[in-house]
Length: 423
Image 1 (cartoon, rainbow, N blue to C red):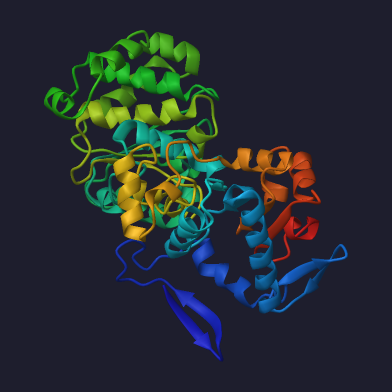
Image 2 (cartoon, one colour; image 1 turned 45 degrees about the vertical axis):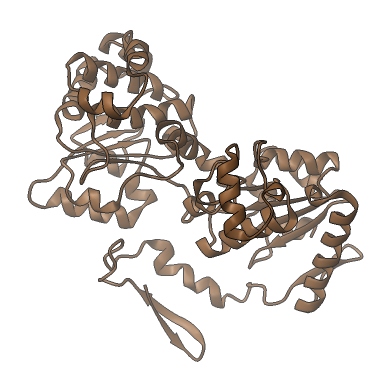
């Protein structure tokens, strides 16, 4: 975007028509988010709690306090006494700095983001199917695809700039076929050629039914399957029970609708699929998301223009959290279980490999809170998120944040409930 500035303040923004992603378009946050920069409620100075009250402090005072407390904790309890709980709202460079600080500086594994609670499914489905947590395509694939498959994703509301790009295709020459899976008749669903409205919690049965029909019809790419996948026979056996009648009895979807969708999905020469919270926040989420990946694999519709699957993210930079290692995984999709990956990262950062997290799973968000509750975590740095409102078991979370031994650092431009509670 272009940013208009007068007297040191933002006064307006506009999208850049030459940008390859948004093509000059901005969504509601892009158009209006900048207004918060000049809000009278925005915090301009650090706040330190003294005698139970938050009071303004200088940057030197606040940072010196953080350094002193963290050094004392590391000396007494090791770096494992410190935890970081971050967000899906930062820039890539900030996540990368956070990962270096946590992994190589503090030397601990207690780092995760609130993305754990919204798109952990995306990460694990991608890792299960492709071995790495990264979407294997580009938004440019929407420009040339013959079909679009939205599963639990009301893109018209959640990604308005991308939706505008899709509308360009739907209203242009040679529009793609579009299938939408959503229990509701959303604005996205209203534009679909086939709208499937399954019972809540039956996404896996639905995908099994579609895969059953595609395999039964012989609409699979055997050469691609043999060259690039494993255990196709197991998949074929798993979905063999899911006839249109059987899948329809579970999902409530009429067999003729399943057949109509399978006809498009099984015959289209190219396909772009997207998955979001309608899958991620539902029953058997990762298995359901992985079945969308499997649809592309059995048809060989991946790794070429117009053919990919997007396990979407619920926040603007959730993927960066994971790419940069700020969710406990190692940076750049390196595997903490592989010594050669740990050694590669250690060489890049010029540190001994043994100090980096390796061998054991990273601590997920709710366990970070549990360790703080039990007293093994004594300092919790919260970045760009508001757990006193957004986490499950709120009464318990607020009690944890109020523990006398827990030193809480809350990094937020506004006076959130987490800041008010105890920081």
